[in-house]
Image (tube, rainbow over all chains, first blue to last red; front, side, top):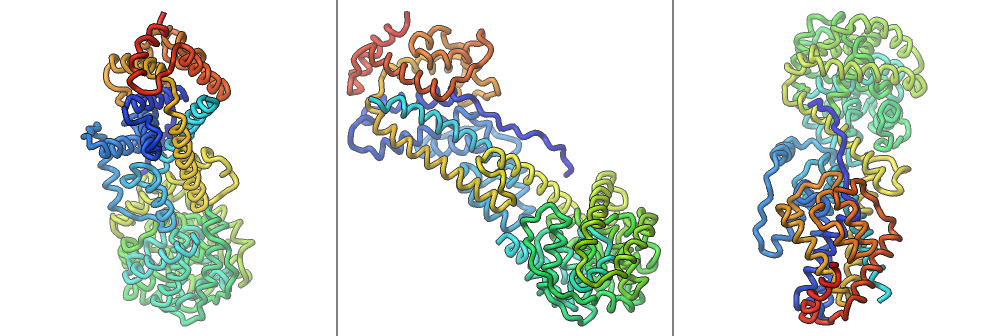
Amino acid sequence: MASADKPINTDVPEKDVFALHFLQSLSNLRRQNTFNSPEKTNDRVKKIKKAAYVSMARAAGGTNRLWSRALLRRAAKENNKVVRLPRRKKRVTCLRRRRSNRRDPVEEEEAERLRNLVPGGGGMETSKLMEETAHYIKCLSMQVKVMQCLVDGLAPK
Amino acid sequence: MDVNEKEEFSGEKRNTSYDSADNHPSDWRISGSNPVSAPFGSYSTENLITASCSPSQMMDSFGQTLWYDPTNLQAVGYGGFSGGHPSSSSSSCFRGNMDRSLEMGWSMPNLLPPKGNGLFLPNASSFLPPSMAQLPADSGFIERAARFSLFSDMVNQPLAKPESVGLFLEGQCPSTEVNVGVAHNDASTAMKGPNVRSSEQASKPNVSEDTQSSGQKGGETSSKGFDSKKRKRNRQNSEADQSHKSEEEAENNGDKKRNDEQSPNSPGNKTNSGKQQGKQTSDPKHGYIHVRARRGQATNSHSLAERVRREKISERMKFLQDLVPGCNKVTGKAVMLDEIINYVQSLQRQVEFLSMKLATVNPQMDFNLEALLAKDVRELQLRGGSSSATPFPQNMPMVYPPLPHGFMQQTLSSIGRNISSPLSPINGGYKRQETNGWEGDLQNVIHINYGAGDVPSDPAAATASLPSSNMKVEP
């Protein structure tokens, strides 16, 4: 088990990439006929929120990250789309690790909460979960910045 | 909270482990913090875990106090050790010692909050004696005793030198070695502790030392010697043991009070050496692996794996700590995880809030942006595959080079610049815009879009105006 510690790679693309994806999804949303009706604001909100997450997942690394894959898959499921994601070899190890469950109960309790928060966290080992969480946090903060800028830009209207 | 939970958890484990002698060997190895001998003399009052004179008692005490981590093993070791003697045992004392010693020796102080010092009775000394002769018969008991002694060492001196332990063990009970070894193996398999391996490795050498020294004083050391003998590794460290022996004796002979002051010094040294020894032995896999094989492959590999896993998790926790703002002062996994969870939740809430805001503002957004972006999307798709499928390396902006170089610049003032500069490979370097500038650019873009033409309120009109806007956008 002695494995060399590989540096954790949590590089996130720049803001522009996120902005591009988000704006694309927003424009796609606008094209929908029922989108701009003054009523059904809640629907709009949900759609925009979903678009934000999906665009974030795409911008952050597409299917290279566990959480983004889970997010995209979840979104596709809602749309009743069949999503084919390239198989990753590491999945098997995740399953194997679950068998040897020697985890600290306290730590696992916290990890459980984290799993519920981070998309796709259910199938990850704790160490992998931490890594995904770090990347997820970075991407989330980037997405928040983009959205904030967008809102500020549009607010004066 | 963490401590309690872990204690309970460890308690469960202890119960299961104690039932079989197999657990002990693992404990021995894990505890490796300090030689058992030291604890007997010095720990007597505090360190010795007189929680249970009998295995059942130990189990109970462990259930209350045992820490999931190797520290628990220490506790267990103590409990078992005192099992032979009906000495008053205070689980609280044990806990206190364990906590203290753990804090001293281990790098997880937050996990073990100091809990007052209980009274420890130096039971270990009393019940060791006859064990020597009965070792073969009571291999399980001896193992337990040995383990306890090891644990006591660990408690006081988490880092014990494996060498001393090895030497001591071999010399004292050659006859029982085999039996003990077998018993240890069995016990080790039963033991389940994340850091059992590490602690065992660390404590082994120490235990042998302690047992040896204690035995000299009385029965304690003899039992310790037996226990340490179980460790095959100790053979390698026979020389070191003798040197440590003198130290241990001095310590043992010392006070019966709490050994906090003394233990930090010796444990620090011993623990380091123990850990190093453990690591060294694990890597070349000489005697340690040999012992492990006897006890059972499962436990050994698991404990090793557990150790590596824990190290990984702690490393990632540190990484997350840097990421989450305001977590530098927080130490400990539980609190840190709480903070991380709160931060993620707050970020998600922010996204939701901003999306709500955008929902109200959205209808007024310019449709020219759609056209502009549509072209980008087309370009990206032309490149081959959707952007989502494209792996995003660090120089992600380079993925978008196919976009016309001047497209963005013309249409989206500074935003276009921001996007196109990284997008165009010619430019090379990627320039990030400040948030303020970003907002300004966005606003400029919007203004431009609006200025380009009337913004139709309904999508139908918008699509009609798209071509016109396109024409305006492109030269």
